[in-house]
Image 1: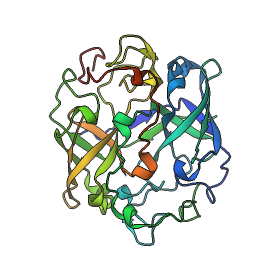
Image 2: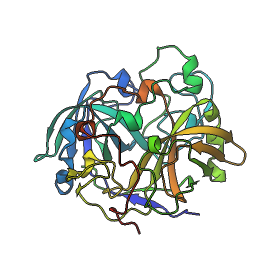
Image 3: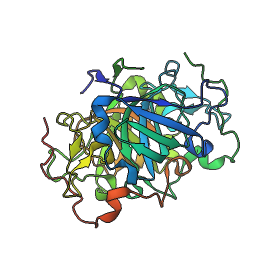
Image 4: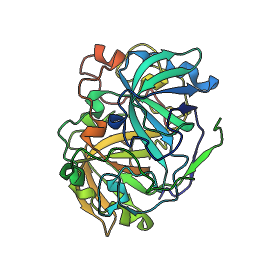
Length: 164
Length: 164
């Protein structure tokens, strides 16, 4: 059993217009055209080469202002309690965020990636960037449990998950 | 600048038939129908409720046997060097893996999730489970840079990324 803690080091920071939780879009599709930047620290910049050809990238980041974990939550888009792992709520045992954002412009030298559809809070610590590859990542008709039963409303965060 | 290390605790372990790197499928689409199990530790099991209705889930895990980071790699599916962040190669600054696997069966009480399309090594430490939601995650026609120029071959790992 692998129960040892695992330590990661941020590789950069994500800057966005979202300074507080309330009003922040809860997913990239609800943040259409909202611009932000990824600033990759100097020691990792060489790894950005070839990323400009991708329309989208996955950002994996630390939900650095999430409150402590709850295993049962009422998600933004629902009215009843759901198991945490059946939601994308931020108060997770490991506060890891995942967003597919659009790539607008890449400058390897300065380490700046201009992105669109940003749904994370300003100054979010970045852990990894992966290319979005439809063949690996896109399952258009995948059934989505309780989320399939909901309408299209309520895509903006309120203050139900207090932040630090 | 957020440069402090971030420490996570595994929430479970993924068991798979892949005991060694060579021959392991490099992505779920290349591991079609390969069965594995997620074993969630007792203290997190309540969070699994409602997950059974999802056809796929994201597993976010520690690439625990990846060798040290390289910023430039020749990916499995290519013959020239690419920037690490434009690849899904395991030797990343933060060894975080991401796979959308199919859910076959969920037992909340035992914490066991039977899954298909597993592409990770046996005994991989699990960090997070998120529901796969097409509206959040599926971008069928997203351009995929250098990967769009390749054929369909070479989907199985060889030994180019030595493991620990």
